Length: 581
Image 1 (cartoon, helix red, strand yellow):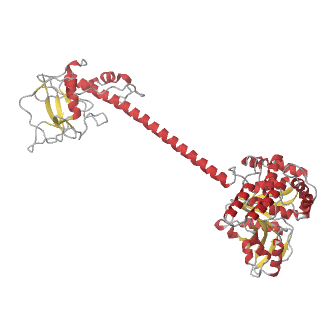
Image 2 (cartoon, rainbow, N blue to C red):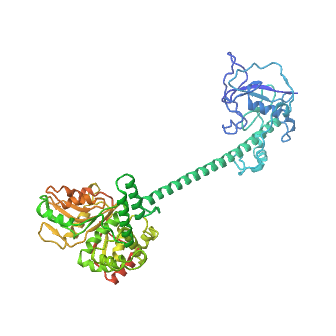
Image 3 (tube, rainbow, N blue to C red):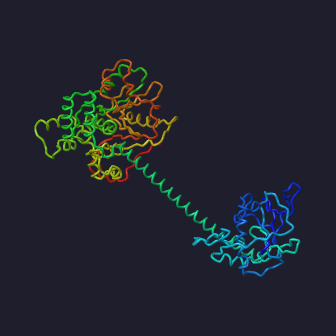
């Protein structure tokens, strides 16, 4: 038989041997072990405030489990001989929870029968089968590997075998170096420490498994976020493709026919008109010549007359050479502004004898070549020779592709996969430059890459255009009708054509712009200009009206020889522009 002596511990680890007058233990200072008090750590078996074991209201569950197990196997520990004097039957002191009232110490000891592990229902925690990292010693922190118990016995045996204090009745006490639990038998203490080490090794393995699980969850979350990001990027890219006409949804012809069918469904177009316009558009597409349904001529001449007779607030005005206005149609609405502005610029160049001879030869060869690759005779050939050769939008797309095949702007060509015809692709200043240069028209790109005035304005842009129109026309006339071609003006999302500039009486400047977004009906009002000049509101743009971050212009300035054209083709391998400022 083994005698067990109960002592009471409060939540701070202090012990008491006698009850107070109220029936509770007074809190006394904690008795230090042989090497001083142990600092709190994650390996303590019983923490303050834990629940009590069934049947033992004065003990923590872990303490009861531990000593019920160690009492049964105390005699099997071969590590150290017994040190100090034990009780009469070698029983250890069993702590109770500090928050329960202490019972008076009985005068006679109570015999406790020996129990096996099966009877008590208590089992040792299983050792982890494998651990990615060697467990550390809970006493010194060194990596001990599989020999943790041997390490503790070899390096810290003095803690296990250190003599404790006397109980006062002749029994020697031994304190656990890991949880400060007190025993009267050194073998029980050794077994108790072994359980500490096993629990520490098991917790190390659990921590590693928790870390692996956390890493796996984080990896899955990263993959999910990456997948969502890729999906969002694909959707945004498809949206941009649709916006810029690169989604393979058809080109000018498909959009024109689809919009006409919609007009018929809504009752805005009669069926006979639908078939007539369809026949006209098919002929235009086959010939490559614009049908002229969106053209308005004579606007520059009307402006010249107006400024000479009216407009008291204008000090001087400079106008470009004659130019026809082209607006968007059912086939290019929403994406065709660049092509329409090229048609405006080309119409002015063809009316100028300096550029006409250079352009007509190449355009005639291109225009009279029909869809099936044969030449026509008779009426159609005469029509081509006698009219202004303004190519249709699909034909302009083919002409840009021809310029790319000659070697102009390979980087720009790769952006469109060397294909424009049959698409709704937007074009800009670079494509206009390549096309004009391939037609032997000398031009340059000027890049106003940042605002140069207050509130995001571009006064340098207005000054440059004023110099462009006035440098060869320094006369004192109020209205100057120059021979200068119009200027292609590009900004993000839209383009227009500059046909003149006003200088007000207060020296402020105002541009005159042809916008493809203005319909023929609106432009016709300029031909019937009244005295108040309200129709000019469609054309006038002051400095405060142009506040885009960047503007690019393409300005024509002569004709190229064949050698100069070849040189510019080689230089366009890396297309550059003149930046202002």
